[in-house]
Length: 174
Image (cartoon, rainbow, N blue to C red; front, top):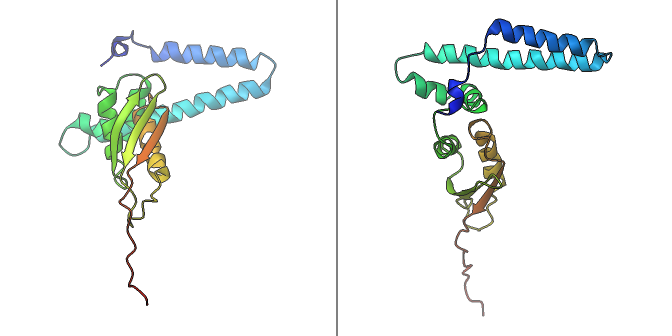
């Protein structure tokens, strides 16, 4: 876990007071659209975190087994942990977890470029043996899975393995 897990505790009362102060400043700024947008933002964040906490409680009270595995396997809870740099798994493990969830595509990790945030994957060619398989569907599926587990990945490239070309064999005509 990162150093963020040892950050100073935040008081709910103190945080609530600060949010109210900011909303009051925006309300008195004279722009009602800004104040309304700020209030909507706070409501959206409260809904998001409330849903995450409810899900965490549900997962922790679920059937026997490893409660941490249940939390880390849940998209909403895992995304909250990653968002706050609290996720106990390293980047490569989270990439593997995300790719494992993309069952409809056979994807292999080729590499990750830290500077650009580009993850390169290899996908098996589409069935049919024509060598015309597209990695677009695999890329979109991988991007969706990686979005909540690995925000460090900013782009996904998929190399498609080419299938052997079929040789058309016909009968000789005279």
